[in-house]
Length: 334
Image 1 (cartoon, rainbow, N blue to C red):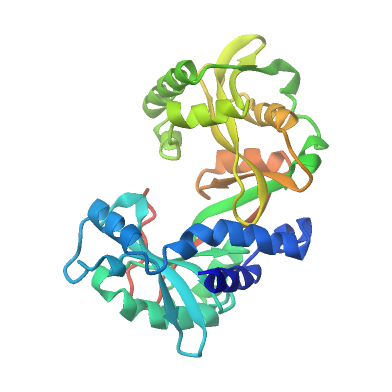
Image 2: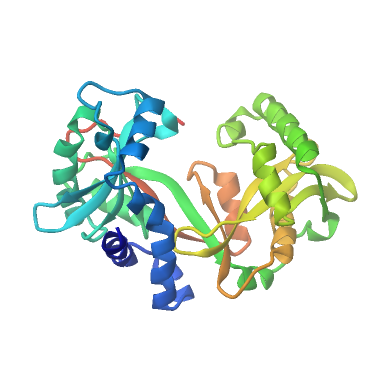
């Protein structure tokens, strides 16, 4: 697996955003890629992983062998390779796709056409709707795919954007107007989990268009944040307004932190408090040199995207649904 992991990390260098590459020395970036890819590399030909996924989703005809569900290293027509795995959006067996985890091919329509040529027959029993790739410039790749005859026009789209900023630069960013009114107070996971649940329940009734992007964190998740001293009740003018939590989470070739939860009650939404809240979190992060604050945002969630960009974070890649000609593509509904 060591040789495979090294090849995957080397290949992912070419699929990494130039912005991320500028933040780290190449040897550090390569090691961060190795660490991030280790789990997926270990799933190649892993019957235990494949069996667990099969049992969770339910076997299709001709897919009883757990190795059909394990990650695979596929040879490509031009002599390259791709490491791939069958996945299901939201765990829904009616929405299968093939995750392209790493490949020797470049992040271009021609490169992805070669990958698709090997992937489609290899996963025919699952009838995947499309492929998914992590691209350095997600929107630009979608535009290129739209104009390429090897892919279905209008059926390639950005799944999630990755936004990030170096902590040291975010701390130097101008403060949001609401920053003086906001403060944070450490809280208990059980109490704040209940608060999160209440806010999301209210959100689903009052603002269903926002609730579709929201997945509340539970007590277990918030406990992990609390162990790092990064679980807080949000106060606005000393009045309880919501919950925010962060966690050290190295991913996407970066080291740093991710905001795991940020929810404000109805009385405090719509007042541009979220950017100020995140800035207070940034001030408290136990960051080292090169650490970032990153997150993934659905491109349809314009409010969260605007908030992230207003703090100085930038798009550093994203996941793209890639639909070869003849496939239906992934539905835009979540």
